[in-house]
Image 1 (cartoon, helix red, strand yellow):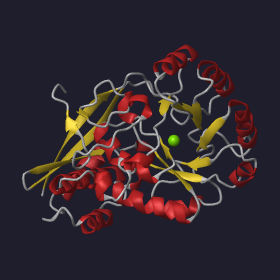
Image 2: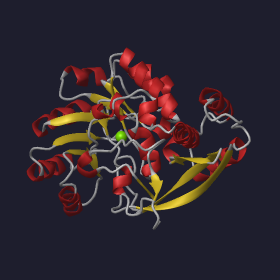
Image 3: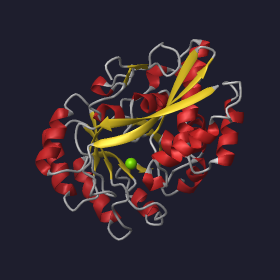
Image 4: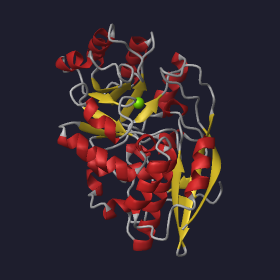
Length: 343
Ligand code: MG
């Protein structure tokens, strides 16, 4: 198998701010697209490394350079290949997710079946995705809500002193929509109960990561109030974190770049289910390549937040759609995506 990769500069339609990173105003973001060629077929995968998880484009590229000789000659030997990579690069989950995604795409293309079918899933069971509204000036946020008119589910980034003002504005513009909030670690054990109680008036579907990772001791008390399910994101990175979140959280948010790809994500979903927890699929800012890999797991989860490609002005791939919040799992083989001719 031949592994090659390239950097892609993505242009966002708007700057994207969250509670943890208030200073970000960049409208550009770079990712790595990986290609695995075998037997005349090509599989695509994406790495969206995050400095929050101590990864970078450079570290991912170094991993690819070493991994190119470690893939072997059988793309279906997924467990063996991924075990070798995890043993050598335990911190490079985003780069491993790219290889995992490319192998799933490649195997699907060789078999002539889409990944969702290969995994034994019923595509009609996938929920709609939310569209995320990042933190910004009130008039810009208002504009973003108006632009998101076609999406029935909004995810609002909170954790600022202006949360109530923002949510009042959202409810004024979108009184009937399903609204989720993500505090991105923005609250503390001293204020989380009061902040969550104040969400009651806004009719919130779920609350993502209210307190910092590891600060969980106050969350069982918040859950007792039954305001909305509390979902772990920064607190649940890989499969070893799932059971640590049981008790403090109602569910987990799985992102392929955090956990290392489809194969580990399936393991996390089963672990979460066995602990009675809900499951959400999330993403980074990434192209349709990375988003598709996650979307094929859509039929297994309760909530989808896979809007990374919808935030882009220059997605280099197409095939997944997303209009009205509906990601399309087609009958095309593999991940069901193709390169846009113009980009
Ligand atoms: Mg989140």
